Length: 364
Picture (cartoon, rainbow, N blue to C red):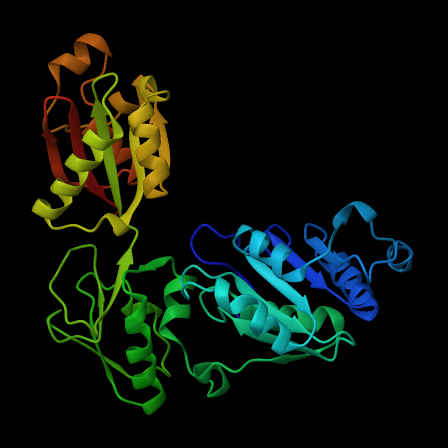
């Protein structure tokens, strides 16, 4: 099993992710302190009734790493979505009752691992694949000499799961409910029909996964593309992050005006916003509120290029006289799109409204 890692923006290194360790009994507190020494960046949440400062002396752990609480239910409700992973040192039944009202979906929920207070077992409870709970349970068990307990069907049958393949290879999952249909076919040994016109997913599949290349997205089990092709409800759609958006705008252009143009352009030009990897623009726009909000709302890196960087891009299809006059560059959106795609290929030349210019490039 691969090392513990989280989805999309979550950190791969378990020392750096936001991890919470919870305990409600004296023995549980001692186990929490022990686990805390394995993950120094973790935050301990300890019941006031069970916590004793002397517990920290045993493992030379800093007391500042602990936060005490009166009500587990109230504290967990306040903290649950603030952390990427939770380790509970109490009965699984308590964990289930406490977190059930807090769960949303396998895409959003943090990893949850339950450890008994004697440290015999580390049980992956929630978000085993996409949240990384399975990998965390295995890693934690190794650190405290426990037995990892994994119950996901593909894992116990030593089969690959499509959601883990997607997560490990930075493919965004557009429709998570379709995962169960694909994984059920994997469990039954039914060959998967895969539409992957640019062969991004196919080279990643192991020899244990029975599959065949498919010529159409319409009847495929899995579609891997940046294009918005028509698919059935049970088709799993994976989005490779291979596109970059180049943008320019007049000073003071609102986020609402920008995103409206971005969305209408994506629909008209048939590309998925989920396949965007970054947004590029000129350094002059580093304080442009509308662009900053666009990056934040789309959860994309914003890259601000200097005049020399933008002018280094050759073969600009639509040079701008205005940009050259006021900014000293031949192009903003086209050049920035190409640079943000690692000097990729321009697949959508400049389009513009009265306030916004857009271009899209693809990594090659």
